[in-house]
Length: 106
Image (cartoon, rainbow, N blue to C red):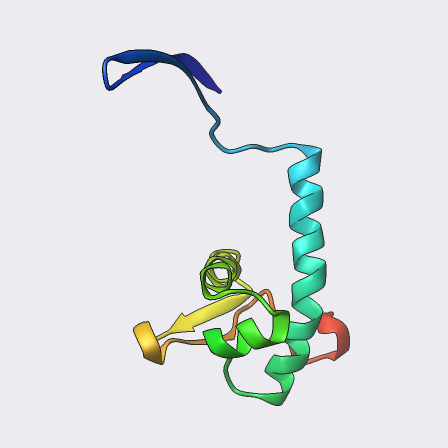
């Protein structure tokens, strides 16, 4: 964590900058996020070849910006793979989203 003073428009103010947070609370939030998303994504991926941003938004009732963030996170963590970009972007199952067996278990 960084704490210090910063000057903005000629005024000094206290600044706190937090980097990556590794705490039990963050781990619990991450786990809850995955538990709510992964089962439905496995089911969807088993029935269809790919997922779109629009399908994700409809499935989880989230706005476009949140869908982009969540999809990017799922790509970063290996649950999905991004194919294409822009309007033609599609998401296919990654190594973390095993759809070959029920419940995603290997």
